[in-house]
Image (tube, rainbow, N blue to C red; front, top):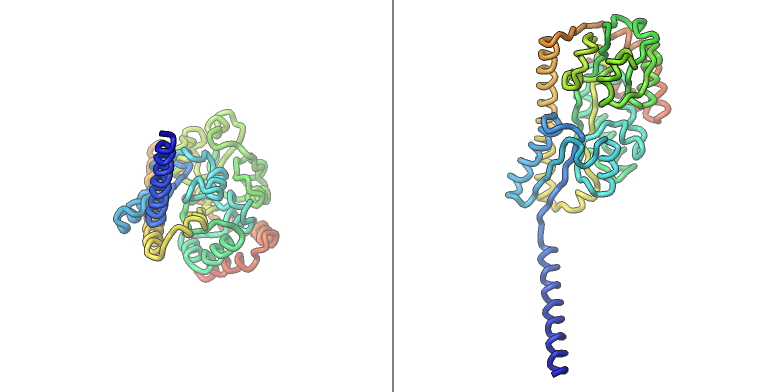
Length: 336
């Protein structure tokens, strides 16, 4: 009886081993790809629109072999710093972040945080869709395990506060909530302002209590945060045609065969087009809504602001070791 039981156990073990081997072979032959996409922005943002287009194209072109799962509203990371770390560890496969949140991995990209680096939408597109964008891609790939798929935007940033501004002198001793980037802080200081760090979700109360005199952001964010209810004067300084990096990691490309990679890039291209279009549409809609709700929009001659901050840009480019890249961007502007 004992011998029979023993033989039965051996037989079960052999069957189990064979089943496991077959399962492993089937898994090895499984070409399905599932990607996790995440943003800290909400489901109505341009980034979410781009993600949805990527998801649709990916799944349609691959006949469902490739799929994408979208997480918005900070579900997988409440800030961009967390999303970059998640990308590096593999918890997230794709995201979109500001250059300033990539400086731990690739310091040079902080160049794209500089005010007045770009002076028009056309200038930005020529640079980022051309040689400047390609060179930046290569730097990121060489210095990290991240890959820049393409360049998206988060609108054009403007000054807003309790009073409009007409010239750099009007910024003297004005406390302004600004991005944490040292280069950005230096630029505002060069204009005479007093830059300070305030969490975005605390800014409504900060303006209400006069913790700061002013802030800066794109029209969509200003409207969605209702800051115009307290600081109704928006001056179109156009100091930042923003660059956002649509990222993935080396690990994702290691999973793709040639056919899947071709589909992947097709989805990236269409996602970028959708995200950029949505960004521009939302900016126009937000401008109209801001005016309807009592905000005052002021035009301003930006040339004096560009001139006053030129030394800051040149110094930052030198410190970051990207003088040649900065010169290429400046040359494109001069050719316009």
